[in-house]
Length: 353
Ligand code: NAD
Ligand code: ZN
Ligand code: ZN
Image (cartoon, rainbow, N blue to C red; front, side, top):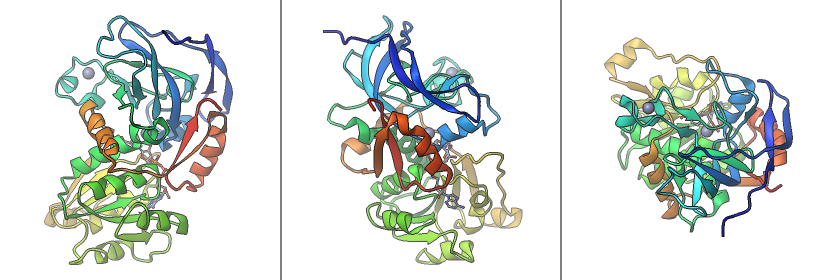
């Protein structure tokens, strides 16, 4: 029996960058031929959603906008071109909502680089609502054995850090520094890194994050950036031979670490930039970067294959990310804590509350 779909639903909407957020009823959209309508059960809150609300980046958001791009739910309607997906399937509405599938980047599965990519919760309405639209070709396929609240943070944070770790080229047994280890992306990065056989140096601040990072997330070392008087030295000293980590994953929301990482990475090491602090610039000393043969690169979400792989790590029980569930109506509280850097792990919104 086809599920009954209401004409109206609750959503978190803002009319202009900077807010305010309004929790209110809006119409439920109908899927185009190549789209699905997803009854979002849970949505993670990524720092990107806060950047979108703030208008932090040199890329305009749609306005008014429903944010959110870690939406886990159930397909309730589909267009007639959506052939390989059924009503009742569990899917994820992720950052890449759709792409042209025809340009040279899409042809080589680099769909995040597609100039026509649609971005959930940024250029199209996202998952901070009970019913969201996404292109059928792009929704993440979620195995029904996986709880939808737990998988929500994987749909952006997990995919992104998994991809970033692959981009780093770090191999089992090597060491990766995760900068911002106590946040949403960082907490998952620690888990994926462990699952990939890497040793982890977690960098963040505060006792809660330290406890989580070295406890349940399994990092070998934690360095508190607010307490360290010489971060470069401390990070290098945390590796067995004192030469520094083979890779650095920058998932922090401040500029400073983007200007330090090239100094402590190991010779021939790789710095992977993932965090997107507003107006920030990278900096690296030319002399040391050259004679150490350092690689510095950006990494942007993941493609459909990275998505399937990142979810498979979860299904196999290799990933267990920390998250707290609150109601969709409580999004402003989550943003307040996020601004203060006071979230260890992720908040997940239950759209029924
Ligand atoms: P978050 O707020 O959950 O976590 C950020 C963490 O960085 C916090 O724990 C904070 O304490 C820590 N931090 C702040 N300053 C630091 C410093 N100097 N050194 C070390 N740690 C520091 O944010 P999140 O949801 O994990 O997102 C992180 C960033 O990644 C955001 O800018 C977001 O937009 C970006 N992002 C990028 C991609 C991509 O594809 N490249 C995808 C998702 C998110
Ligand atoms: Zn995100
Ligand atoms: Zn394309």
